[in-house]
Image (tube, rainbow, N blue to C red; front, side, top):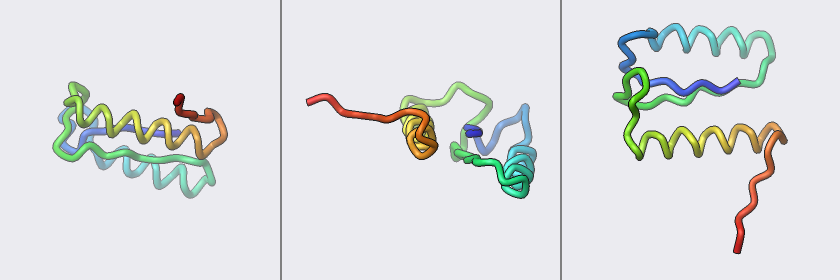
Length: 72
């Protein structure tokens, strides 16, 4: 499981996502929490979205779910 969350999310407290990922770790479930510093509840900038999508692709690749290739 991968989560993307803004650190200053006013709707879902960041601490709740941290607790979720700690519980997932304890249960032995593969997971990753990607933090968007200063990010809110969505509405991320282009740079923040690029960070999120890079993390998603990397996570899926590590799980052998998606193999990324680059075209020449």
